[in-house]
Amino acid sequence: MIEAVGLTKRYGAKTAVYNLSFQVRPGAVTGFLGPNGSGKSTTMRMILGLDNPTSGQVTIGGYPYRKLPNASRQVGALLDAKAVHGGRTARNHLLSLAQLSGIPARRVDEVLGVVGLQDVAGKRSKGFSLGMGQRLGIAAALLGDPQVLLFDEPVNGLDPEGILWVRNLMKSLAAEGRTVFVSSHLMSEMALTADHLIVIGRGQLLADMSVTDFISANSADFARVRTPGSEPEQREKLTTALTEAGGQVLPEQDGALRVMGLPLPRISDIAHETDVRLWELSPHQASLEEAYMRMTQGAVDYRSTTDQRAGLQQPLPPGVQPPMPVPGQGQPDWYAPPPPQQGGQPFAMPGQMPGQMPGQPPASPYGAPAAPAAPTGQPNPYAQPAAAPAAQPAPTKSEDAR
Ligand SMILES: Nc1ncnc2c1ncn2[C@@H]1O[C@H](COP(=O)(O)OP(=O)(O)OP(=O)(O)O)[C@@H](O)[C@H]1O
Image (cartoon, rainbow, N blue to C red):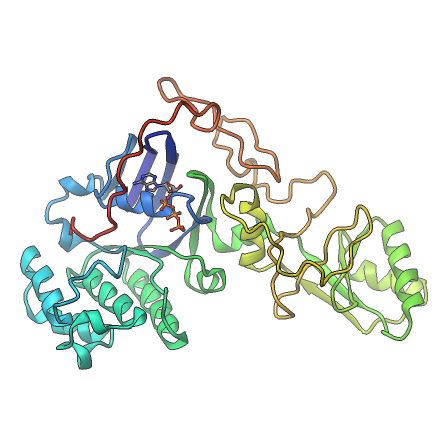
């Protein structure tokens, strides 16, 4: 098990990770999510002893990485697939890692087979594609047959077959009882791979829960309702009736209606009472991507100032929320779904708000997570940034600690 307690990392005036506490348990794939620059790689480097926490600690099986007996046989990691001596062949790269860790040479051919690189084992890795490099990095992580595995963006650059292979590999490693901690920006992939999620934003914990709970806690169930396209007055009549009954009705891009706050049988009854024919009445739940976008929208550091679709859209009437993409229909949008109910807490966790640590005040639902109360001796990094001293040089992402 990996356990972080009050983990904080500052680079000069920049706080990359703040007061992070979580556990990554064996027997499950735990996804590690967060927007760009939220502190995922920094956290992973601290887990692997490549960076020292400013305060707090992180342990693997109860030990800080650097104090683990025979660490490379217990923990495997893919942090940066490019951290390879390009002049070496794939086999020699793995052989040198194996020798450093006292791993028998036959294990090298085993892992080359596992990752499907046996046919190019004698080729220099500098000629490898991005996907081949990822596979070589995964082979290195598996070399010591470790119980704890960390993967930073393992499917980066892989083709669909490679992505499927990584998904099945992660699941089978977890099914063997190993601890598998994997970061990714591919939500659809994470939804299929991970059992549990740890979500951070601006270095702070936003969520620590199962994928299923995360989606239901951060998404509003809704119904899609479609009336005959040739009868817009029917659509208007139904919109009015549903709104009067307490529903929230939003137009969808394809002419259907998105109805929140009313159960399907009630919508059907209202349509019947108002004499409106329905061509569609279907239940929907937001995808992991939608749930994630909603949760992290206040914690995104980097966002384009240009809406690529500006000018292509009709301006919406005042007070009307933009329509949501429906899973499987059209391109997903960058914006998050509207709150399920006016004044509601759209992504509230049971008894706790995102970014709200136990005992701390709740965060605004759509703002950045509230800065946590500063513990004694640990100033709140988001309150008043001090004058910036010179930043330390960036540590290279590498597997040197292996
Ligand atoms: N050595 C460093 N010196 C100064 N700032 C750093 C250093 N390493 C990371 N940071 C900053 O810390 C923050 C967290 O970075 P980190 O790479 O951990 O984020 P991330 O979640 O892995 O991002 P991404 O998803 O883009 O890979 C960023 O603002 C980054 O610029």
